[in-house]
Image (cartoon, rainbow, N blue to C red; front, side, top):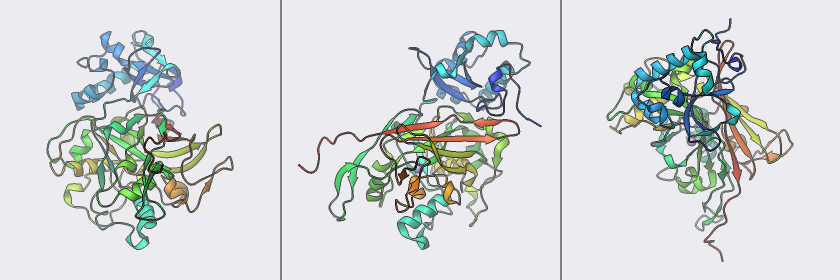
Length: 419
Ligand code: MN
């Protein structure tokens, strides 16, 4: 039996669409020379909800007219629930409002998509166990792969909100300080080991100014996006001790353009894996707070066709975003509307489910082959990397839209360190 909710928007009524009535993800779009508007994806259309608020069909204190979803998120959970319920009624097959709503639909193909919210601050975690073991084994050997704190704390670092860009924005290969063959003589130049990290991003929708519980953290998360944490492995390897990632992670973080709400993902909740060591009480989940979301990554060389290089699932994470947010707040750290939390790289147990090229090519020692016959260890100029995600229901799926970026050649170095 299909659980697909039926809509009068015909393209929303099939098992293959990313945006059935069950989904209703929130984005920011513009057409021609217009300003960005709040929109909701339905089938192959986007509904201009800013126009519906002006028309009086929706009423959320004018927040739908602000161009993105930040002000709406700040209204709180009552409004989140009411908008989803009103949109479901307006777009359902038995809606009596079709004539009022239909003029405000725009074909998705004519819409340019923007960042769906103002990224307040950005934190990235390291909470996928297969990834941590793979990377730890490469860097420190199998015996020391997991640091002693790893099974007790979701490890993270504070990244840069300014690095977050929307899908489709090209990324330039970074220049940076790199270790030379002789350890004490570094040089400055283009990263030779530029990589992706397949992640999910959780969006904080309610502010907190003191420690919050895992349940409160779960309730404060507005929704999720796909996130690609572009990573320069050679810059990272030279700089990371003792304070962690810095310039190797500062170039760009691409997110998918649609916020898939926690409400839409509710049927897909699942538990984190069995604990190897019991967590301290402040990190224990009162109920399943992870999600079953299929993920994959495609690599398309310049002028070539796409190869799917990895397939995994968000349910591989050792810590949920709710646990990460609770931990983040545990020191009294204030959290704000629009804070973005990267999950950490999501790798599965098998070779075909690794969430970075570093792991897929085992540090560059085992290059892998694309469908075109070309080989890759790391990303080459002109390659396009695309993340995909979908929660699979009975007769429908909750899609995220794609999270894509093309790598451009490094900028010329203005102050070369050799004459
Ligand atoms: Mn990361």
